Amino acid sequence: MKLPSLKQLRYFVALAEHGHFGRAAEACFVSPSAFSVAIRDLEALLDANLVDRTNKNVTITADGREVAAKARLCLREVEELVELARSHREPLSGTLRLGVIPTIAPFLLPRLLPGLREDYPQLQLFLREEQTLRLYERLMAGELDVLLIALPYELAQTEQLPLFKDPFRLALREGSTLVDPEHYSPSALPPESILLLEDGHCLREHAISACKLRRAEQYSRFSASSPLTLIEMVDADLGITFLPQMAEGSPLMKNTRIKTWPLADNSYREIGLVWRRGSRQGDSFRLLGEYIRKHHVAKKRE
Image: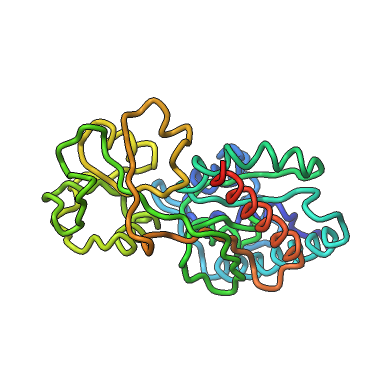
């Protein structure tokens, strides 16, 4: 009996998730034509119509939904098999697929990675930068091993390891008249003066909650799609914002006229690692977490 390949199963699961051949092919790092051929070959092998195709839409058939569900289970079992083999290796060696949110990656990774490579030369690290929910989907699909995200965040069937608190700081262009940073009060901010990331970024919700930004009329009608855009908007004096402390001294802040001021002690987010519950790589993830924590503390003391 000829069996489907793992590649075919992975492609079909991606198609079921994205509902679009082009986006699914992009997620699998393959050309649309090669992706389409793989799906047609899978249908021929199974002698089943898995996908109804039109010019604009892709619909997964009833048979296709069942196959996708079984394919996810198969891929998960293979992932556990790989984890079993990895568990006998040296800690933090071999391949590790790390997912990081955009409001951590540009601030922490440039400082962390050089030392990590030097201390663990056998570690082959692959990085994926996306928003939390998409990273979580990839984690549970077996595409990622562990996530570095901001907490709190409810993610089912995972283990979470808090690492350190990352305080928020008031950020504005030097000389701005929008707010007096020495006498800052969130209730006294002018209308539409607060610049935030767009919906979907957890930094937005964490900043609103931790910094007690309760008046929606103070939020700017414009939002940023990335930390870089947010910093550029503040540097242009289009508003003020609240940046995590780890942003200070980062490449994104260089060559700007942005200054930051501390807020109340309870204005912070927590940084932590998240992995699938029961993963055999748990010891390696805890070792990675301890490395990140010690590295962060050491940098703060410099």
